[in-house]
Amino acid sequence: MLQRIKKKNLYEEIAVQIIKHITDGHYRPGQKLPGERDLAVQLGVNRASLREALRVLEFMRVVEKKVGEGVFVRDPARECSLEAIIFRFLAEDGLDRESMQGACEAIIIVESNMARLAARRAAGPDLDRLHNLLQKMSPLPGDAETFTDLDHQFHQLVGQMGRSPVLFAVASTMWIIMKRYAGILHRSPERRQKCADGHRLITAAIAAGDEDRAYREMERHLKGAVDVLLGGAAAAK
Image 1: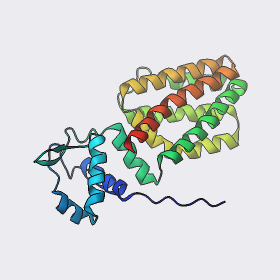
Image 2 (image 1 turned 90 degrees about the horizontal axis):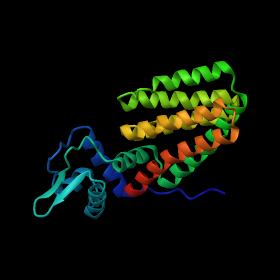
Image 3 (image 1 turned 90 degrees about the vertical axis):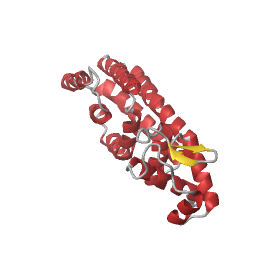
Image 4 (image 1 turned 120 degrees about the vertical axis):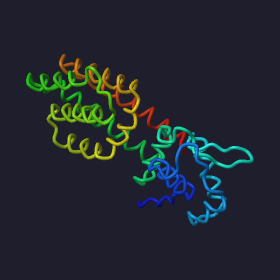
């Protein structure tokens, strides 16, 4: 059966517009936003929806309301909270928390099974490639973008080692969207380290040919990342 199309709330669109202006540098740290009336006119929205958007942005630590003075961009504005970044990306991708959760559940199932197959089917050259990739992650790259590329390569390699073209095609398609969210998580050095540790545990299980352990380690690895991601999405909503 066809499902009813969800209508995006107006306040979400307003919040995304303001976040984009901040990250693009149009509103600077410490700068006061235009007054409520002027801002509503500029955006072409009603003031009630604008107030709701500003309440959301205040909760996400993007702006700060000072009684009797107005609404100010928090400092530093370019270091928006995890919740704010996820909120913006979900809106840009036309997703909500429910759809994101469904996508995450699917990728956990697919990649955990690919890890199981990799433990069953991996050959010597495959394991050499996997260990060489792990070496590139130690010491940890200092920037999120480089690490995210290595993370993507790791998951692709595990998928190739499983020798299941169908599962690999599904996972590769999902990664087109998920890579940008992985990049959000990797902004934190602590999360980069946790991710690298997970890769080592997965590799050890695959190298040992332990199918069940490879499945469990991949599942644990991805669920940890998803918990952080969806926690941020929930806070943003």
